[in-house]
Image 1 (cartoon, rainbow, N blue to C red):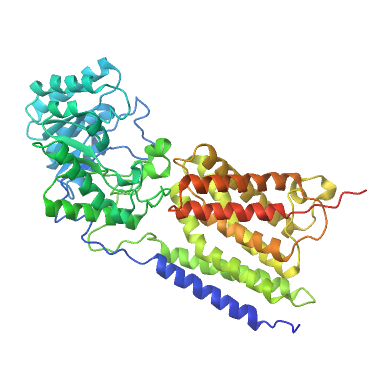
Image 2: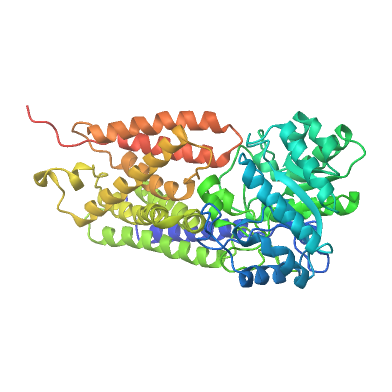
Length: 541
């Protein structure tokens, strides 16, 4: 075999860099929208408002939001919307009507109902007082939000409560719930002045793709209109998340959120029906209840209080794509640099197949680093979340670099015992230790996520990007530099079994339309196969 000259790896490096640039050119392509999703010259009819920022949460009853913070929010919302919808008067939200009057906003005032009758009556009394004090601000009262969905009241009790409120206020009264619960509890229709339905295509029992979301909303609206003729049908909640895990074919993303909102608003304008979007601001506290996706339904970013989609600006899924592209190119160069440095120190010329594997590792890592970093920024919650996803990204970044050196030198993928086993069996090579550490971290975090999808999958994110960055070089190293002798370590065998079993279950459970799930499951299977081929030292006879 002729020795491979330096031209071959340099040519492959150029190929890798070209593929990374092409991939990010595609990933950063702006979305084509029918209209601007947020346009100050064509204000929204209404938008759901919750004032919580950072670590503030209504899950802590003592949380009180200052009037200055609410006033700041309402002044911003007045530039894009005619109205805000609230859900209760707790946590300082009783201040909203007074502050909305100063901002020039109308308010659809919510009364939060639950299973505690005395709290319900206290909330009703406060809202009745607000409607009398701010008759020009409060345009309607929503008596209860999804209380039937939560099972905290019967339809008969809810209808009686609505009838209790109606004589005490001079504005229209309604109830708000997911559209199916209106069809199941028709007696509530007789008690309200208009019907308020929630249509969230992403959260449907059979999730709807973003491309069909607006048509789904219109179809459900018309269906409810036929079922309940003679009264206005207000869409009290609709929208799309900008980040989080897929549900079947429903993909949260910035472009999908902008597209769905734009298409629904365009439809509402053409067919002349009212829409309240959920929601004004991203709400980080909801992530404790609904996972990553729960915190990213807002039209405005939670941290910087900036519009996600300013009118006149293009919308793409990766606003920092130039940074991600640059980091990907640097990472690819580092991978090839590690391989070339190893080649110079070896007396033989590596196989072409080894350089192809280096190219595959460098290219996949270069493309996916930005995706993985973006996911880490959105999905990390709390110290534990940042440590977990940061460790996985760190291991995934080191894996292709260290594997490139091993591929060219002919070294096999180290076992866990070479890192954490008995002292006499540990490898003296710091490169092998680093590679074993990257493999161990990837395996532990992957196993944690895999078991999560097995036992509690609904709100969990798919770690497909960082997982692939690590698995591709590990798998390539296992194929090309396979150990010839030794016994299969128990730890690797157990993890391999876990990954294969959970991958099969998750793929079936999530369905064939969820590419995030299928991609992640493929990563689990490849990691399982890699670990299954591990061999430790031969047991002495």
